[in-house]
Length: 256
Image (cartoon, rainbow, N blue to C red; front, side, top):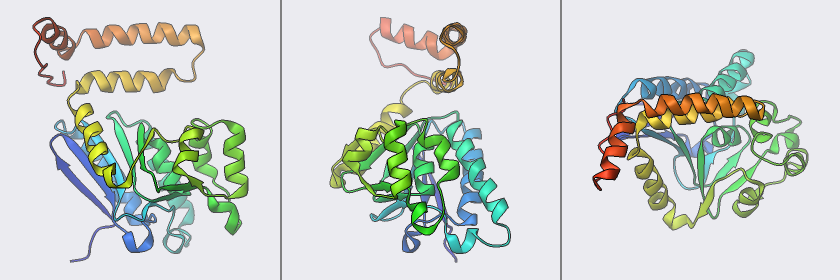
């Protein structure tokens, strides 16, 4: 049976999405993009899933961007739009997303990474936008780059096509933290399990509120968040959380 370009595993309230094209350095095929969109739709409707991990198969690459052979064909406009839709879908996904960067993260792979809420990278990971080296330009992912990185540093990366180390990526603000290669899986799992233990409805309302207010004027943002706080406080999970705190026990969240 032919292997899928993208794999999905759900275990202990965590969904694991893996780009399964190790021989192609986990470049994105049209099939992988379509499966990614389908899996996210399925995960969103699955109440048992509380957090999502995104990574690449093997140890050499997280994702090196588009598979030029499969996406630059006669339907290239459709492929571009499908990738753009995927970036939007990940960015506004209601459940927490964690990118585990286990190697090269380049071009369109940078877009997937930046669309995640949290990014944990191995100390040997590499980052960059090498599009200029082949006469292209990182168009769609630019919307995410400039929302995460200082403009001058971002422009140097984009215009030079230079590859960055994990330390440089952390300094630039495009990843959350660095872990030794041999501890990447263990430390990422700790983060996933920690978030999976929180109130799903609380995280959903909070995450959506923070992203929604990001471009609002200050006073409008504060008023908006005040209303959202009232929405969170009215949930069953909030009542359970406060009660468990007073009773000095672990809360039992139900997602309502």
